[in-house]
Image (cartoon, rainbow, N blue to C red; front, side):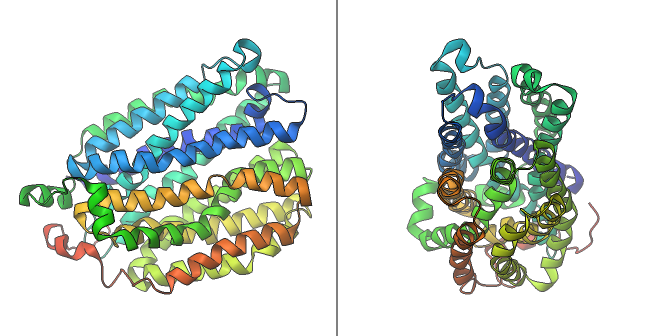
Length: 435
């Protein structure tokens, strides 16, 4: 099977999943806090709205268990088809929801239910997309292949942010809140149909086919994972926490932080976010390729150190002018976090054997995501109590990064020793970059 179709299948679904997921995050502060959670105190409305945003993250471990079981037991392809349907369908329905003014309390209840479906779907999508790329990768370029589905994050967020920015620029504030915000959600159904068509034409990965032919499939992948690989799951959780908090801030809460607490306009905030994501599109595949030569661990460690050192300068300077906000979004999100994230899928997947790889990779990553997903609630309270204090916010980020820094020191260089070695001979060993 052509590698180009495999990589496109891993990327296109990831783009749509993250488009839908972060579209909700972008709309939380700009739309949902007003239309679905009205309150006389804007801070309370925002806090409640971000609680539903966090609920999507909290649901992701559930999805990792459900689709991890399916991916390790039935196959990667079946799991990835269902995650697309769940995410796209729920996003389309969000675009049709009546507001609080129209149906009262049912509006936020339905919104939360659909957000939970989004979270469950994404909980199974990320791990499967990574494995689709890495388990098909020729030996020697797994880092490059594993970075391709990671491009779904910036591409999806750019698409979501651009769609909201475009609609916002073409409508008045009243029109945007009345109907404009719904258009990007409704477009999800078209994108999902395209992704389903592409994924339907792929085969199972060589690693899973080998496990199935040998009959060595886990009876209950979740229990098998925690029986034999529970330490690795905890390791993945800790490795993700440090950059995870910064990621959620840089890719979602920055819109609220820069508009409500720094006084920037909505267009400036969205432009800064778009600049950071556009930079990531270049950084991710380049660093993914470099990781095949200098190692995932080296890049991961360097990224965490830079993130730690620049935490307080970031929060100090972004309030000075839009130029600093643009620069630091490009540097922190587009270069430093992108370098960490580009290696993350490959690094984490290389820690688990094929038998429980989908489950172990997904559960560890998504538990960490569930924890960091409630960051916006904490930051809203912090901002109300201390304002946009660089020491408070920077210190919070440094504490999370420290956890990951300690754990990466005890992580093997998986470029040299990985769980993929048992099945490397079953796939192409040419180090050519042709796809």
